[in-house]
Length: 83
Length: 516
Image (tube, rainbow over all chains, first blue to last red; front, side, top):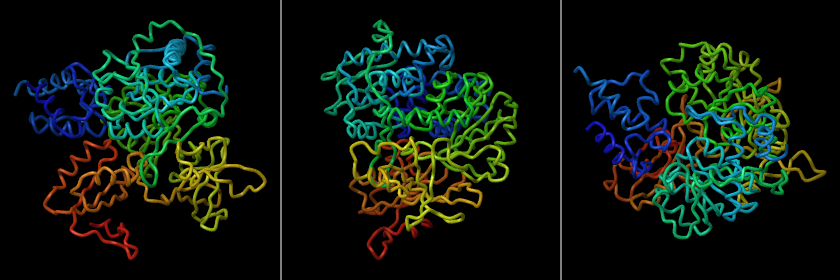
């Protein structure tokens, strides 16, 4: 579900939808495909914080957490567990 | 070594097993890269690529991008590395402008290039990555990187070239209208690498981090200087400052090139102060001025590192650098001419400026490019006869930048002569942004201007009048821009007003729009 919301966001937001590959898998790199760049990431983080009610720390802004839809999902799940 | 691909071939001969490039966990040797490039070059030749043809490369930073660049060079063709952030409209403009014959890209990207692949001159496509992509293959010869890899011909192709032959076309924005392709010969690029390796003291022990795109001459130079001295280049797509810090430590990076926005973001990374960076021998800056407060922060954060503040413009690659020893005394200076270049400042009377006087910087030397592809009139406005030499034909490049010299000969950037905006390290033409907006019928008039900003250099402000004031909202105009322009060109400020202020000559009065 989290992954789906993220995918929908990419599919509808003007910043991202043009660069989104048609058959992007959850495990495909969003960075290598050019979907995310250093300016777009700021918007994505704001969306995640507002939608999932979490706070993303500056030290959590890295490729490990944001490289793929799967890794973003894992990151958000980890942050919301225990609430 | 006269030719750009000889930089690779030479290193492959001397140090075949040395790591040439690192990408994530992969390490490729000089022999690996040279042989991949050779296989691809032989394939391209079989597909009909000839000396002088233009071949585009539209990939994110990767070993494939490096291999593609050198493969095209080895065929004698001219490579056109296209910024991976550009969208279909901008890519199709470029490929049409230089009548590109072929394109190397990934299947996914090719699927999104509707207008680009339809152009008449396009004959062949090389697909990287998995799958061959869903695009119209009807009149195109298509091959994949996988096919090429098994094709077997690993020897250096024998193509007759001299260093006066064109090696690359680098697209850059012009002061009016759309981007222009700066033509670079093998000599331009090799001489540029020679100069930089000299003042940066590059050796084969260097491990250079590449975060700038190869579609930028500044970014491309990391690749050429690295291969020239048989060093190692670590390839990275820059998104997160945290990851850059980790990479610097993990790969023991000795040299890093950036632009002002990058340095400022890097300084804000939470893990930046956790290390001492003893291996980081030097960092370089170009593409704009770093505010002095950040220069000082860089010195505190990287106490063992020499900082090189530099200046250049695409039409002449690089003009000046500040000796790191001078940074204490003059952190705002762009320094003096780089090795094998001379710079002059000329005032409005065409005479050389005296110390303290501001004038346009002109560059003399072997980095002066051949001008703009297909645009002799535009070229003639920038590449002109040296005003100080009458005895023979000798061309210099006019920068369009106003610069001042102090009593000791150190130079300082003052401002652009024309309306170009310098934002986030890019030179942006207001006309390109206007162009996209004017395509919508609701627009009456558009004015695009740069507002000084400490971090970005300039913020892009767009002021609009609509035919019908109610027909479009500022927020929706922003979305429109985001879809059609690369992110660094998307305006930071959009304002709709009722009436555009005009000068007595009937032109839009930009000075009055700064405060709107």
